[in-house]
Image (cartoon, rainbow, N blue to C red; front, side):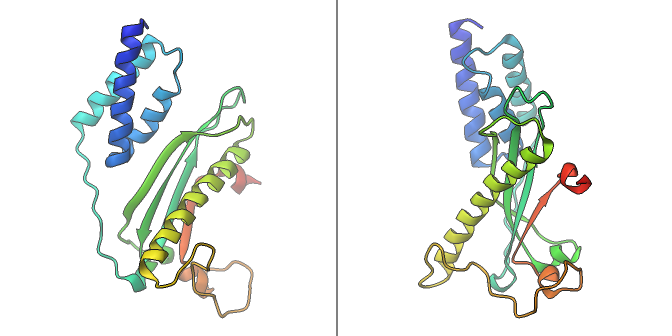
Length: 200
């Protein structure tokens, strides 16, 4: 691309990033991937940006924030990462932090309110799908804990960073079973499609 075209593409990426942060989670991955093309973007990157912007303009997105009582408020973290099989590039990963109710842990339909979402390149290269998922899960969990600390500080008088975020379970530790109370009513859940972990 020429210098002028690169400047126009930078403006488009800035607009995509702003939209992604403010209310278009579906733009987050595309904005991150296109931004990673710099400092040497190509015409293909510009076409990808134009196609993404056209798609976003065509599709309306409505984000509903559900009224969930504090007693029923549970946290949800959805994590995913792409895998570069060559190990030559940093893989893409993203996550969504949301609030839901205990119904979700019981396998029932439940309201989900999106709170935060991100899409980024992993900080390091990896030739292992399992490592990509682990790195992504770790970064995403840090985001969940940051938001959990903020909401606890807003709702609980005297809460300080580092204090427990959940009530302690009074049942003895057991092998993971569906019957355990803490599994039927988790304070937080992480959902990911780590097939390598499942296979292992």
